[in-house]
Image 1: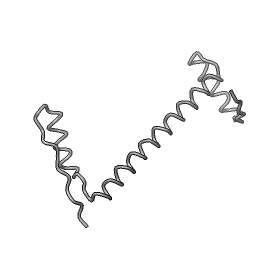
Image 2 (image 1 turned 30 degrees about the horizontal axis):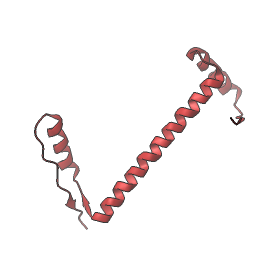
Image 3 (image 1 turned 120 degrees about the vertical axis):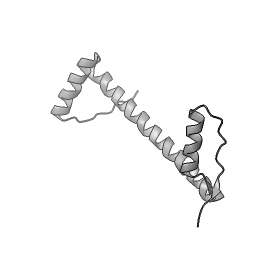
Length: 94
C-alpha cells in the first residue's frame, strides 16, 4: 500500500479529528472513508454522463426520440397499475 501526504489546514485537521471521534473511528479511517465515498461518487457521475452521451449518440444516429409528454403518460399509466402501451419513437424535427 502506498502512502500519500496531504497538507491540511489546522482548522480542517481539527474538524476531521472531531468528526472522526464522533463517528467512533480514527482520523485516518475517517479520511480514507471520505476519499472512498468521493471517488465512488465521481465514478458514478462519470458512468451517468457516459450513458447520457451514448443515448444522445443513438438519438443523433437514428434521428428518433421519445417526447417527454408521451413518456410521462406511459410512466404514469404503468405506475397507476393500468396497462400501458410504450410510446413510439418519433423522427426529430429538423
